[in-house]
Length: 341
Ligand SMILES: Nc1ncnc2c1ncn2[C@@H]1O[C@H](COP(=O)(O)OP(=O)(O)OP(=O)(O)O)[C@@H](O)[C@H]1O
Image (cartoon, rainbow, N blue to C red; front, top):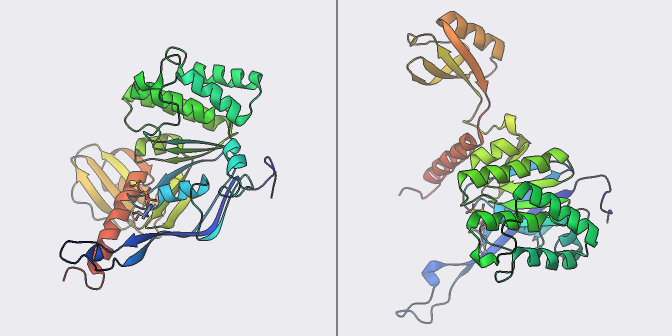
């Protein structure tokens, strides 16, 4: 077991598989067939997942509903035990060393709170100080910093049950960060927040990212958030990692990078050798380079085709990837044996 601070990945998930027991609906209890036995099955939530995250990385975990994101977070936070493979966070087994793991880790789970509902948030922070065994000075320093960014003192003496959602989410983030964890798992941290508070929380998170001290795993359906914050994006699709790489190099079949071309006037029909037209609206045209065509050749051909005002090269967005995955899933299901019969 490596000590905290030792080199190597902070999060190390190796060949992890996890499935859950399910019950066949046809076999569920009914008045007509009270003694029919329910048939048990298994739903594969994660299959041979590998994920290594180093210090200072800010990783966005994306996937459609049911893709396996929460299961992976629960394995990394020690709430679930893998069926096969290993999970290590700061060198510890999160399930077996749950207490020690909690000291290295901060977690927020969407709209659920870890604060004591009837107590003012500041009292919850004091309890957390005791739980994490923080020295008084460190706790005061940390609280002052968080107050600075999240403006907590205006409402931290109010019982949590009376706080607005935005105020509560800010307190929850503070609770997750108070002990300066090395790893932060944020599951939908800005869900339900208004635009202003969202911006404040994002601002805090990007400041955190800039320190390079934390390793952050962010699960969200908010693509703007991913694109604003995450340096690396991991996409999970039906329990498997289908993309793991820098944000600007997201690629899944069907989401290749495109050129956004603004012509001076609507161009004539474009018959290009190096790219295909994806969409056009007036003078704006999106083209996708054909395999093997490099950017310079595509740009040259566009400039020769019609007077151009601007050309922008864009990587696929996180949203494009999810949309492509969704389409692919539908096609596979439609083509599956027995489908559509
Ligand atoms: N406790 C459980 N019992 C049975 N099946 C489960 C359980 N938890 C998750 N699953 C199944 O495992 C798969 C992955 O679920 P998971 O919650 O990890 O997905 P997710 O990507 O977090 O989805 P969402 O974005 O909707 O939260 C799904 O098919 C889900 O139905």
